[in-house]
Structure formats: C-alpha cells, structure tokens
Length: 199
Image (tube, rainbow, N blue to C red; front, side):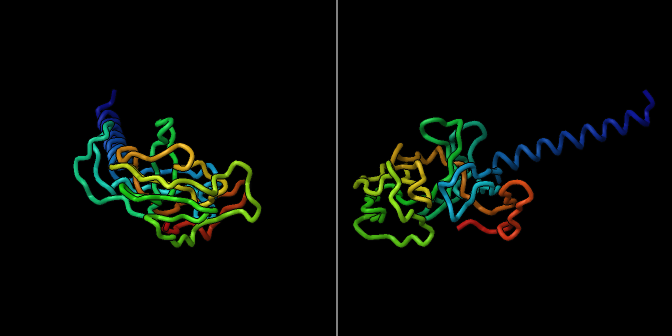
C-alpha cells in the first residue's frame, strides 16, 4: 500500500478510536439520551420527547458497577429522574421523586401528603373522570433508607411506586435535564419544546 494512503488511513483510524472513546466516556459519566415512550409524565413530558439525562447530578459511578466513585449530590423532592425499573433492570423508567428516605407518604383522593403535610404539585395531572384501577388512595408508607418513592405526573396513567414499590438509590441513572428533540409523528415537530429545561 502506498505510504501516503497508509498515513491517511492511520489518521482516520486514530480519529475514529478517539471519537468512540470520548462518546463512551460521555455516555458513561456525563449524559444519556432518553426517549419518552408513554403518557405517564404528561404535561411535563410528552410521548415523543427526547431528552438528555445528567448522569453527573448525583455522583460518578464506576463503569458497569453500582459503586459511586465521587458523590456529587443527593436526589431531592421534585427531581425528575431516569432509573432502572426495579422489576426489570433492563428497562429505564422516568418519574418524579415524591418521597426521600424516611418520608411518610400517603395519597388521599389523588392528593399527596408527605409527613402529614399536603404537598403543592403544580405539575400534577388528574383525569376529571376516575380511571378504573387507578390508585387514588394509598399508604401511608415510610420510605426505607437509600430508597425513593416516585410517581408520574399524569397520576391516573402512571405505573409507579404505588404499584411496584420503591427505587433503590443505586438504580438511579441520573436527573432529567433538557429536551433536545420533540416529535409527535409525521411532520409534527414540536419546535417550542426543544431546549426546554425539565422541572
């Protein structure tokens, strides 16, 4: 092979290898892309929203393990998080943190009480007509150490901690951060949502 072509090929291979390593490092430690597949977080998040998850929010984990190398912060009330679904860790779910370790959570007629106090939930959506099978009353339960109670904002259409229990701290992948794309299908691109920070 011509030495000039060998040099060019080597440069391309090196550039590709560096790009792959950087992409792996960024995905492992910094951000992860996530697509909203269901209506459980409507109106905050819509089906077809694509978002970035900040994996650095709560700490840096050793790749392929649950071991935290550097603790950065703690999950807080109201954080929207992406986590491994406790009943099938191959699936990622997205919900809002309602209860921290030690909190007592109770739901009465779709109103959440935390430690006996009604909490303000401007993001919450509840159907005018009760949905069969929806848990409008629940608890009280005490959130165990190193675990979290999560709920979807679209309460009558969310499978969450009311149904399958708590989320262990080590299952949390990161905090939902920003929408980078929103597509309702066909030519319906929701331009006004792109760039919105998730609250």
